Length: 127
Ligand code: SF4
Ligand code: SF4
Image 1 (cartoon, helix red, strand yellow):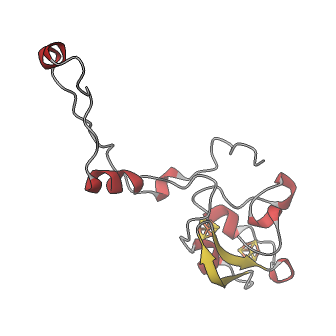
Image 2: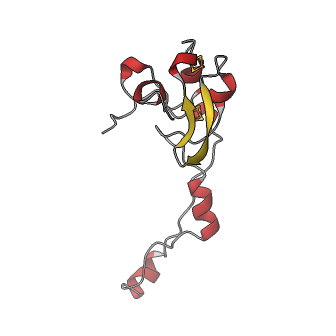
Image 3: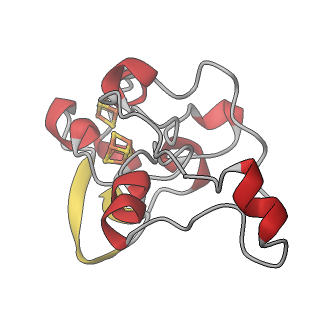
């Protein structure tokens, strides 16, 4: 099981600020006169999609491609059949150890091998 991310692992400056969706609540008098009715409304489809866009993908690769773009040593190559959380193959023998990919990864997915998890530590095969 993956250990919790350190507090500073997610680089919040990378993400656009998006306000949380407001969920309407029925007024008190209305609740008292209709006690069996739902108090809080549900999100619309559009609002739910907007909420999903607020996800920072903490600790899971979301294909921002920053590691791929900043790597000088061809450490990352795109895999042929990506799936959620898994987009790049990592080649340890091509890595020059500059640490730029870890520095740039916004969601805290990449870590040094010594810290135990992430592409640099979890496997030499895929992010
Ligand atoms: S640490 Fe290795 S994989 Fe990461 S950017 Fe540097 S050369 Fe590429
Ligand atoms: S490992 Fe990090 S920097 Fe690389 S694509 Fe995934 S989220 Fe972006």
